[in-house]
Amino acid sequence: MYLIGDKIITDLQGEKTDAEIVEIEKIYRETDREGNFVENGLIILEGAIPSIKLPFECHEDVLIIHYPESKIEENQDDNKVIYRCKDKAYTLQINDYRIVVGEEQLNK
Image 1 (tube, helix red, strand yellow):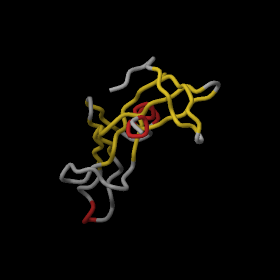
Image 2 (cartoon, rainbow, N blue to C red; image 1 turned 60 degrees about the horizontal axis):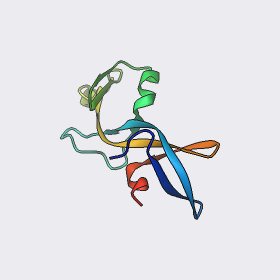
Image 3 (cartoon, rainbow, N blue to C red; image 1 turned 90 degrees about the vertical axis):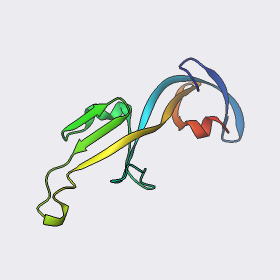
Image 4 (cartoon, rainbow, N blue to C red; image 1 turned 60 degrees about the vertical axis):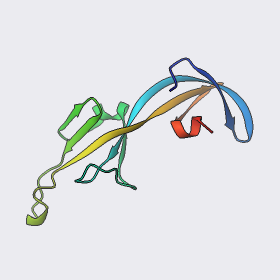
């Protein structure tokens, strides 16, 4: 587990470079009706939640977005999508710029 302020050495374009973790945010991933993560589903960063223009609920590690009701009868119960937090995104400060990476990239 990494924390803000941790110094790491990262591989940037084939060169080992010093970096500092300056921000950590949750990554919410789309789930199916059974609560399993959708392989190619939508991903939302925690910092982007306030910009969602649809009604939503956020409860710790669960984000529920309510979409407009469908006019197609078979889809009328599908007006919400549940996202769960699976991992975190780390913003790294490297010299004068920042990059966002997942935890799996930090562990390489």
